[in-house]
Length: 194
Image (cartoon, rainbow, N blue to C red; front, side, top):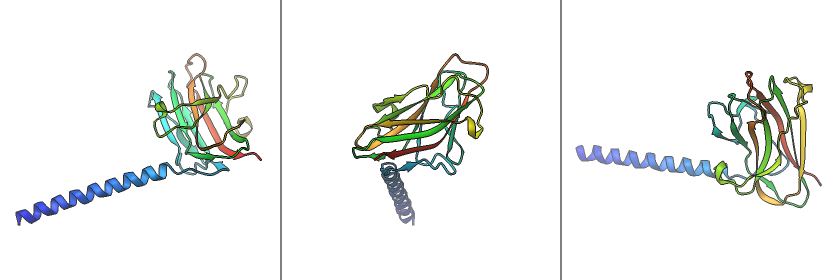
């Protein structure tokens, strides 16, 4: 009786380990799925398959705000927070167009920059990132989150790569202020312009 109980316990542990291994392998396979263009970040109820990498002050991080909208608020310190897209298939000679809208509220202590990587594998610090544009929101941009205040951003890139990750980096911009800055982005889209 004791032997059977011990054998059952060991069998349950092995089955549990197999289930865990299967789930890890399945999540890696899903994470490596390459999406085709045109691509639109729906962000329907969360940030979906986007990865958040907090390099400093992890209490302030990218979060889902509303449909098609991501947000972050600084900590009055030197934040370094990355919002990284899933892998996108940017093959073909046609230029790729990246568009989104951005807005900020109450302060100019932080701003966002756009990067891309051809070798990102889940570790932001280990990947090589190419800067596309920094300080995307100009100092002259009005504050607030009304629809007409969101600034449209657009960039065209000549790239022919089967696996590209884009990232929006939230970093210190000017001197820290007493008022914390919130930035929102929405309608992030990548298309192939023919």
